[in-house]
Image 1 (cartoon, rainbow, N blue to C red):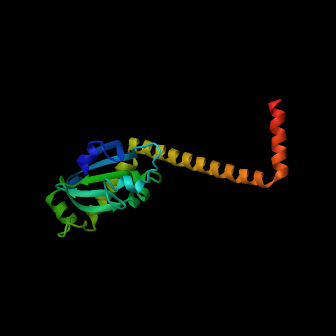
Image 2: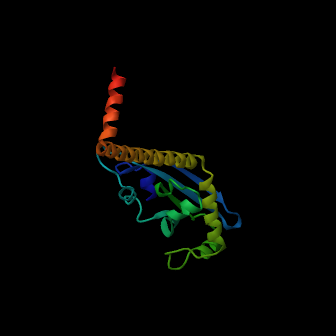
Image 3: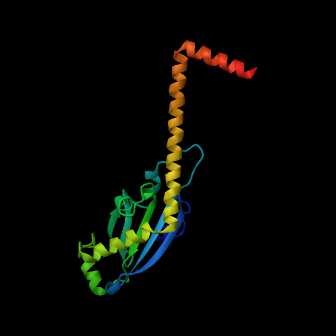
Length: 193
């Protein structure tokens, strides 16, 4: 996943629009590295893009934050973490993050990684790790700008849909009301003179 994302998403249905990495010192427990990528769909004329189809080229379902050790995935946080803990209300579904735990101390790894390697152990280390992820992503300038951009795109699209619906409703009402239709025609004729 990470090599494809660092490559910019070339040949995919989405391109990497922003990315960043943080090396984070978590005290006596060692270090972690937080990588993130913000994705933008590749627009194709006449093709309606469904975000689910684009994202599944990289990740499955609602997966958003991948916790790795030596390149192997050990846990996944869902997009709801980005929405609720990082406050990405508009772009949470467009961001993928990786937390590399290779720099943790042996004791921290033992306290964090379960023997089945399918999830992290609940406890102080996991809480600290997720708190650092939330703090760094929440305060990243590029990610905040990406969030504002997504918000503007979503609100603009909603406004266009609403305007089209209003025009359609008004148009139907005018057609059904001959007196109103006649009045509009007369007003238009006067403006043309």
